[in-house]
Image 1 (spheres, helix red, strand yellow):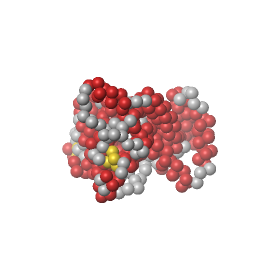
Image 2: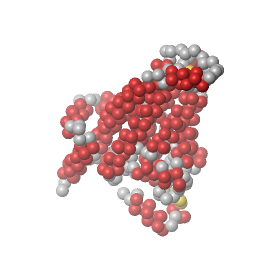
Image 3: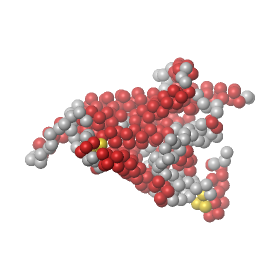
Image 4: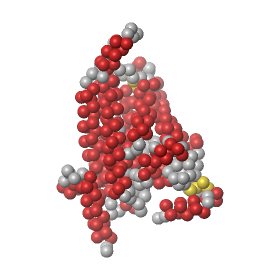
Length: 366
């Protein structure tokens, strides 16, 4: 069988698999339309469009787009300061006012996030895994390995469940924000001054990164990993759909980590929106399975998080290597790693058992 015929067979199998889960969508027509559209774009325009679509895919996957919009809308409203509570009845009344119109927010958030999630993540799957499947050595972090269809389907279904959960959480927070509920966000730069505004950008970024690193590392402790986080590590060759495919409890913790600064640190709403966009964008990039170089000196390449899925207990950071560097949990070339070697340090080759060496060579052979 020639390589071309082999690729054609793989692509046919891939399309059958896609139709299996998205049987209500004419996938062949969609693929044909995308290919015709993309062929008309200038390469630079195509890359720019892909960046924008990845950005919105990240926002949709965690259901954050409505919260971002509500934070912007809140900018144009002023609410009277609340006086001390006099009774339980008054407290209940104020809570009801904070969640006025909640069903509408939930319906809007779930509907729009679902459309964005399947449309944009589906685009990424086509862009890399269909359009360029015959030349993985040019773009794939692990060019010799692809996620099995069973794991791919599992990731789509679990990722969908988490996306819907995130949409509902976002709806509650959005409703609370628009109706004047407390947040630490402020809307006039001069409330805290320009120096603080500028300082708050890296501060917010580092706080979220620190929270993510330590929460993530805790989820790699043996008992917690085997109970919860191992679900996410089923995807040894991650794809965009698997970015939020994790145990529901872990997803709730991840959402909490993202929004803690919103309620604890005075942050200008534009800084908050910008950081959330940034974090969500690179979360999708890190799980795309594609080799994507970073534009910024502090941002690791996509290979950094792909290595986390390939080697398990290493590279715990989200969008910076800083905390891995400080704690010595960056992947080292002269160490071996496996799902059964915990705590992020791996083992020197000379200290590993023969069984561990054979397992490592078997799992990571070309």
